[in-house]
Image (tube, helix red, strand yellow):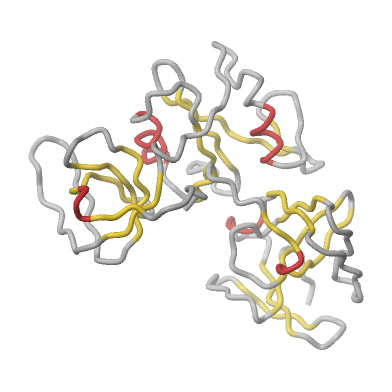
Length: 266
């Protein structure tokens, strides 16, 4: 059977339904993704090699400590990743690399959720990267501009280079770094800046909270004890705004406790 896309060793934790099996040269069963699943096909995030890895099988990718690799199945809890280095690609062991998990990558959230998260921020240029809603195999860059949130499709050419306008990049990480210094908008000077730890963080629910109809057009966010909430609006004295997955709304701030540490995307 021909594995045309991302493969990982069977001890990886996988929940995708569109998997099929193959056997590699060592007789190890591989779980292979078809070219259809949007979660796997286009993600290329940077990773740094922590150790030398001399490949011993044709499907593996050799690398040296300190080299930068580009991970295709970024975000999945797997033991082996599919990585690219120059024109070569192959499987690499997850414990030999460190994936750069950026706090601006939000994964699959709705466009409306992205707008709500950014509109509540006072700073022009705050941004996030998400999977595109209208073209789910692509990424979108959402940026707070002077009077509204703008959404930019991150395009990819035939050489797997990412771009917004004319300048091409090997990874989304490099694209983001470039537009921290160059304007992302053609209409005004807008450079990217991170939301700081006071503006977005993770909190854990201390109690169950059942949302009620408010009658004022605002939505309450319900949750169960122990659930994690991405908090992005703390302007009100008593109520915070946050999201769980694609759900957003407000909740009593006394029902949650902040989890220490920087926000690393969720």
